[in-house]
Figure 1: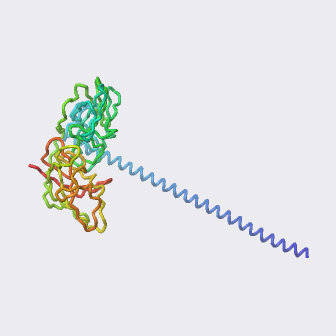
Figure 2 (figure 1 turned 180 degrees about the horizontal axis):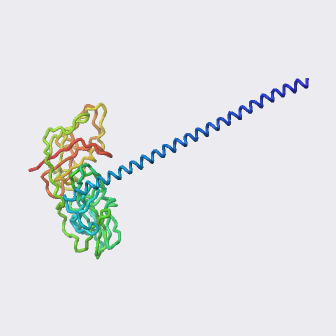
Length: 375
């Protein structure tokens, strides 16, 4: 009986041993598969990573060649305007050139206070200080819309010391012209850039930088009188003329130009300037609502090819049956809205006004434009 018991135990032991061996073999195989899978995943990741960087390098190379090609092309535009021979030591009204823009310093004016873009607010300064307003003109000579960011493009050094930019606190303005900071500029259009610097009186030299280009002025070069806009760039007016009832966009969103007028509304809170008003009829032919809550911010207006301040929402809500674009949140499917876009007019009177109907916000989506000539 003991022998049979021993045999049974031996058989059971053998079975358990075999099971343990199989279990260990299974674990080994599983670990090997996991390692192989991890290795495969790592190899895949490495391959994808290499492919990504290869594509980035290729794109960078393409961009480099594209930039070089663009620069080569833009060199041919030098005959449009005379570029300063020494762009590190320019005088007022001399021109330098960027990849898409010509830039000129029109004037520098001195004031005894900081003037905000909204005329109702000023900031007093100390008696031994003055505020220098640098006034530039920008011209987009390319054939595409380009974004211009003046906040990071300009700086000033007074007697070789960096001057603080007052525009970093709030938007500044002078003589009806406002600081924009960042905006879109259409082909063949100009804009005015305002930069303000608070300095101590008695300074000698100011060096105004646009990136690596610089204008050098001395205290006697600064203007004490009101700024009068006199363009450096003789930009031709558009040969187009829009007519009432003209369809500027069809399809899912139909936009019809109805009318244009210059008005002086009663309830503008901060000024008494005239406004250029473009009226449109917009119909949503799509099956879904169109979001119009942000459209007004990208609608661009021009007077004699110069960019106007952004479309204005401090204006009559209802103008002869037309609603301010900023008061249109959405347009329901199959519904129609009569809206208007208003731009405050400053500076010289113009004989041509233009509205670029851009429904984009982050990206441009120009549906069309309207050009009106005033006799």
